[in-house]
Length: 129
Image 1 (cartoon, rainbow, N blue to C red):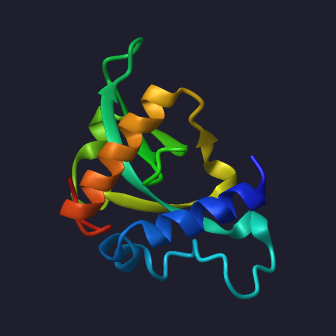
Image 2: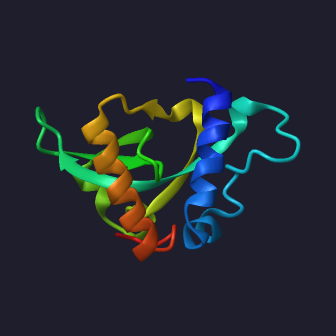
């Protein structure tokens, strides 16, 4: 995945809808200005999937994706870590571009795009869901 691909991706995201652009403003994904160190650039992702781990029932897998579904970020958490307000599952995160994977499967990409767009329309980034 190249930085140019992500910059083009961020530009498409921010022009997809005014509401979504407002929600992602200031999240570090703007490709304008002095980028300095591209490794430190961040991109906003939205919660698209929450499942239990196959091999361990005590594990929750959270998948966040960009609104176009092309990139994802995966987090694994122990079920016991979900107690207390500091461990809430947020509707959206900003993550380093280095921590994003590419979604190669078209069906999965479409599913992630649909769900990320839906979550972004219904929730503020810091909402606990």
